[in-house]
Length: 546
Image 1 (cartoon, rainbow, N blue to C red):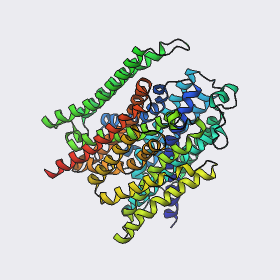
Image 2 (tube, rainbow, N blue to C red):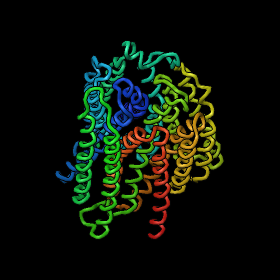
Image 3 (cartoon, rainbow, N blue to C red):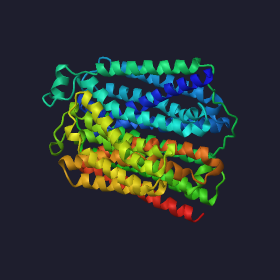
Image 4 (cartoon, one colour):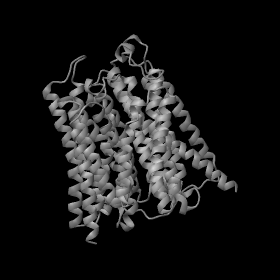
């Protein structure tokens, strides 16, 4: 009885950590346009927040794979899942401390401070990478394995709630009370009325929570340590390929950053430099896509040393995760700047939070709905729940925004988008391939509508991207690891690495925005959704031949 109680306490603590993963990731949607104003950045530079944050996920997962390959044993299994989570929490706490130091006394326009902020976010997310890699199997270990999926769905639902709350809390912390159309953020920053002191307080609180969670895990003696003696399957050629891709990306982004470092104070980039940065960013995308495709082609000729990369569904799935995370992050990362345009409401930074919250709330709505099938309700009840649960989640979002002091009347139209998502669930029939294809088409259609319209129609079209992205991760994951056999665990690790898409695609859209305009740059999101449709159809054909 005591052991079960301890396990529940650990699960509740773990769920809290899940919340803050989502909280911090989603709050970047408010932090990005604020930093752009505060530090006088262009759109590409502001997207480096996502570059640092999601790039850390990739680096963390890659380093674990490299170290495990060198040691010829799984590092996480060697440490134990419990210890790995503790280490990840401590690393994130260190990053939170670095953030507090980075923004201390920060002055408007001080680019060096922004660099320190990026470094702090990288450390925070590096800890997240370690935590998330260990947290899922750890949650399964906290009780009956048959009910492990229930615990993961609980954690995922809380994570999504964090994504909905994060933008609101950060906006209130930065700007004080609820949004006011009567304030000019630029003037408030210049006068010293708005500073980064709130970020200090926020990350101090977050750091303390990380330390508290680490302490609880460390001193809970009756919790499983999560150590196993499972065989580690190396993939030397796959590792070499991933390292080569990483080194090429480092070189590419070095030359990109050099364009900014060579500028004098107050100097703007020339058209030639903007074009060069855009071309280099696209080349970085080609390096990732091309590197993975070439790896799979080589693996087909000689599978030895390639591990999971010999399977086409896995490599295509890696590109799908890369694309999915990229488009999910990119839509909202650039949304704040879009909403400042006259055709989209001319909002100031303090008015953006409800929209960012509703975007991430769309993911919460979808994930709450997607979790219904896990609890095996009757077919009749399931149909009713598919209709009721999304609107309950939508109501929660409206309520949270309302009690925070934001106006919500203009958000009610989002209910129409929710209805379209519900129709998608019914059409998908709980089939991963069909569901992914339907939601990919819906995402592409929404982005196309948003691209060729303005005002409320365009805004809600882009916001609906969160709804259509919501259930893509499990669909992509299940299709990608199907048929991998003994390489399933390794394949899962490769898929997690492809969170890298959140670091690459938003900056590309950001630089496109600098060159052709923020609204026009959203065409890249259409391409991303269409690839996900292609992936769903391609994997269906692959499995039909087996």
